[in-house]
Each structure stands twice: as structure tokens, then as C-alpha cells.
Image 1 (cartoon, rainbow, N blue to C red):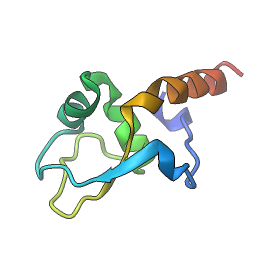
Image 2 (cartoon, helix red, strand yellow):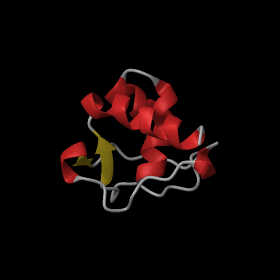
Image 3 (cartoon, rainbow, N blue to C red):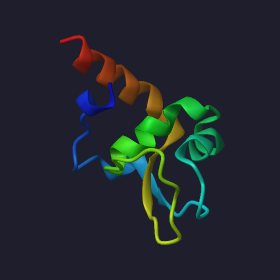
Length: 84
């Protein structure tokens, strides 16, 4: 579950970019725009310490977005954490 997934605060800057999403956007839609699936909303929330995934993006949001090419390896690392 989401509360068991931990990503380091000092995430390698090469793994992500900073984006300012359109205000009022649900994280599921943002996930779809970036990753082609609505199912990675939790990754956006986890990386940005967003505890209410039902909230909408705000005009001042500057979000860390994991670059799509790194998502697979990050998901593998998370899976390894959860199976330990």
C-alpha cells in the first residue's frame, strides 16, 4: 500500500524533472498525460509527499516528476522493498 512505499528525499536529480501542472488537475489525469496510464498517480503523490491524492493540483505546484524512462526500474526497486 501507499504508506509502505518510501522514496529517498534526496532522489537523484537525473531521475526526475520539475513540472508545473495545469491547476485543478487530478493526479490520475496528470499520470495519464505523463506516463500513458492513470495508475501511476500514487508515484507522483509519493515523490512529492502529497498525502491527499484526491486533492487537485494548484497554480503554485512545482512537482517532481519521475522521467518515464526511469519508472520501470523504480517500480522494480519498490517491488523488491515490498517483498523483503
